[in-house]
Image (cartoon, rainbow over all chains, first blue to last red):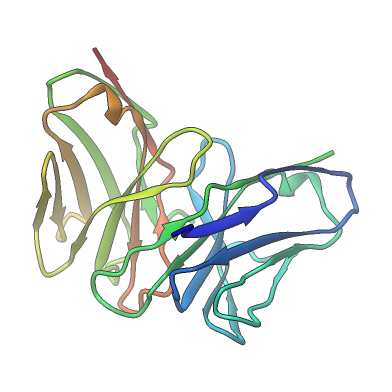
Length: 114
Length: 112
């Protein structure tokens, strides 16, 4: 059971370039999330999805886009990368919507924008 | 606007002693809380949770206490072990469980 899988693990982007961080989960979870963690800071929610075809903004959505065409996949798109997007990105998933819910994280994607 | 705060960036404890990690929140609508543990270069892993209908939840060496009136929760680790050395995040959510708000983390160092 792979859980939540993110690719790539490391990436260096030039300012203005675009890229997609891939995320897949095999736990049949309805809810999926993208977080970023800046040095010395907590996890900030970028976008989340409560099911295929449904996405919503989190705390820091600017500069990012997401789509959720299947239950398993939740890619995060960075358009026109900026140095402020240098961060560690975590994808996560959960059953959602009930007491006892927990979220499961991927191992993270380290992104540097130069 | 940080809705979940962990005011101690680091904590050092001797092996075998108690570790107490603290977390404060500002939103009285939060009713479900979790603690996560994170090792370097890995994703956070779930440790323990507590619902607002309880004031204590225990799982082995880990106990979480919730004080709703003070909007404060704490994680107790007894006894602390060197393998517990990691960054600990607390997180909170409202009744829809769609969004989890995380604190900035506390780095725990358990000395042998």
